[in-house]
Image (cartoon, rainbow, N blue to C red; front, side):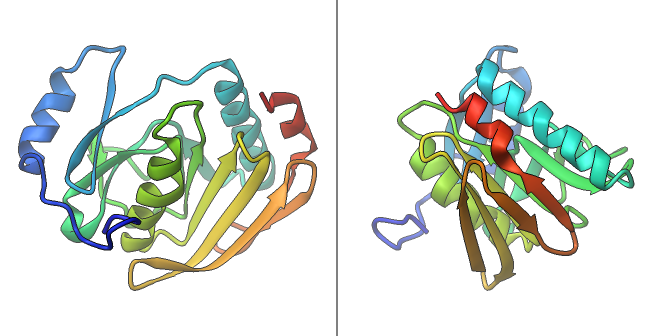
Length: 194
């Protein structure tokens, strides 16, 4: 459903056509299929990449049994007709082996999005992807919001919505509950706010 109308949009194309389009897109273009619409995901800038590396290090130090896969494609959304490319997907080691470009979300413990400086980031990262991850019953969605200088942890997915939401400013201690069980000291994120 769209946040402004509450209606489910009509798909632009069948998901199979989208997958073919995404497979043949140039390397400089990354496509997603969210709420039945093709979206172009911005190529990350240097600060975006630095945040992703910072988070991967935190995950490795605290949960060496898990891996944070960057740019993992997931089947999300109503009836698995959506395709989202995460900034990070936290899973047990080797979880995605043999799953191909668009993996099932089963077993994903946390998805991560880091906002970009483009006009579509509000709808994409704060609404559509959040709702797609909740619909796929992914236990935790972590949004690192560079515009708002805040980290938001969404948990307890039920009926396509996250029932628990906690937001903390950059610099605060952020607890991510089980099944992830991480504590992030986000002071370093102030260095990447731009």
